[in-house]
Length: 91
Image 1 (cartoon, rainbow, N blue to C red):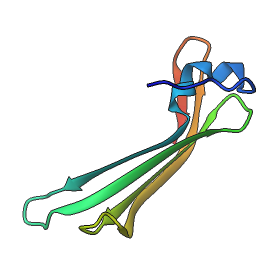
Image 2 (image 1 turned 135 degrees about the vertical axis):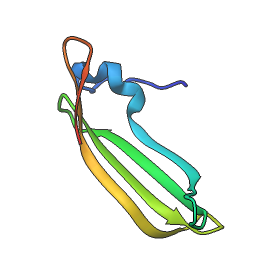
Image 3 (image 1 turned 180 degrees about the horizontal axis):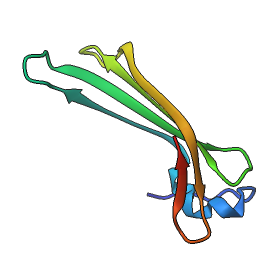
Image 4 (image 1 turned 90 degrees about the vertical axis):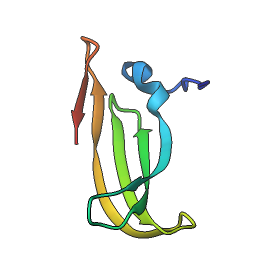
C-alpha cells in the first residue's frame, strides 16, 4: 500500500499514518436457526492536528444489492501512540 505522510501531521502519529482514511468491507453473519444476513462495515480514522486519531466504526445490515437497510452497531473512540511503541485505544 502506498501512502504519503502529510507534512502537517503531528509527528507523534507517523507510526499510525497508514490507518488514516476510510476502510470498508462486507460479509455475512449466519447463526444456527437464523437467516443468513449480509452486512457492511466502514471504519474511519481521522486526525485533526492532535496526538491521536479519532476512530469511528459503523456496521449496517444490507440488502442483496449491498444497500444499507438498517444499522447494526456504531462505536467511536481515540487511538494515541505512546512513547514505548504501544497504542492507547479508548473505545
